[in-house]
Length: 186
Image (cartoon, rainbow, N blue to C red; front, top):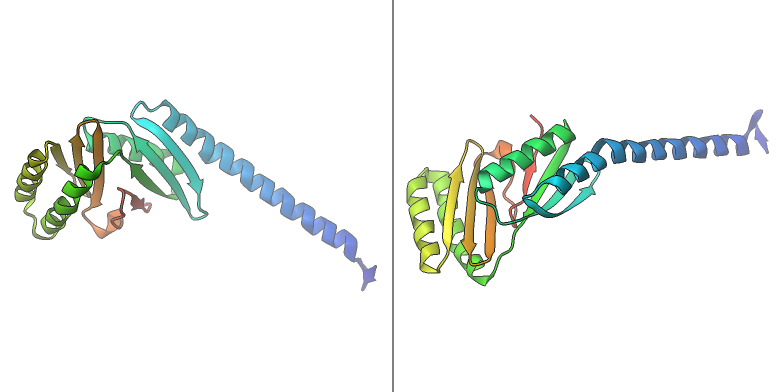
């Protein structure tokens, strides 16, 4: 079958072969450029209990279940910097998973209001005292850290723990339930 001297089956086969080659190259690039380094990084990290990596096209989604850690700010900072080195200019989102119980959910429900107020008014010391007192009343321990971009809330109750990271600026991402934070490259 020909059309103006062009053999249509050969053009179709060449197009399909080119698309298959392009798709295969993209798969290999993703596997060796992101997946393997991320698997090595997260698999060797003693603070990571489990993880899952999902390539969502424009965004690399990294779900991380942390073990019980002493300092959420330091742990998250190391993890974020390491992921940024691997991802480069690519957008990624870190979704932290913790081990909450009903007591922690109840504390967080009330602490969240104080945290949002502190972000607006800047009364961080009042918020810290309120959240610590609230947690102590439930037999828990709350710790709060603050840096330029985020507010870190860590509450421990027995063997359970809650990790929340709340961005302080619009540039550091929106607030997501479950401690997730979206990061865009600078």
